[in-house]
Length: 242
Image (cartoon, rainbow, N blue to C red; front, side, top):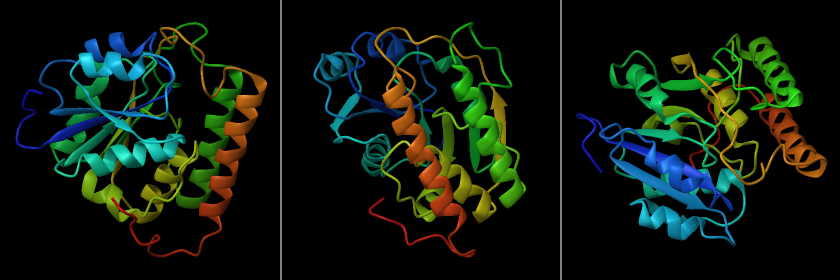
């Protein structure tokens, strides 16, 4: 990959059966913005792995679990200074990667997270319950930590050393909200970046695809929120294998 300045940037993309979207997603990543692209494949039974490899990405067999895929990607990117995360379905617009990375590269933030609700959303790109869940989670975190999040999407970037220090544990869909809660509790400098959000390029959403997957993801996110919120204040759990 091309050089991205003096700081090494790795982009981690968790993926599961995204053959219809992963090729276009990788092709849209601006040249020179990241140094390393890691696709963490959660056991795809379609051509996701082959398409990602052909596009030049490093592909990991991460095993099932959204958080597990993210964790394995971070472990692979041991030489990175900054880790960015993005979904594989093409809904996140890679053109906003420079905006997400800029606050970290200049040292004005430790953690930058995209906000779909503050940006321009294509019609049908987010279900009503996704918007509602983001608002409810944001209200809860604001009450607990005084940090105003408006979204809990995958599209984000964080200093790798800061991420390791958070002691992340969640291996499911609760990974995103755990990161946000631990970052707020740790006092990291956090910034939200409004972004455009699109309909997925193909395939079926693993979260909002049907009632069962929606309930499963929602339950894991809620359980993670309660677990982290009820932990005693102070240092987070000891870092895991990152």
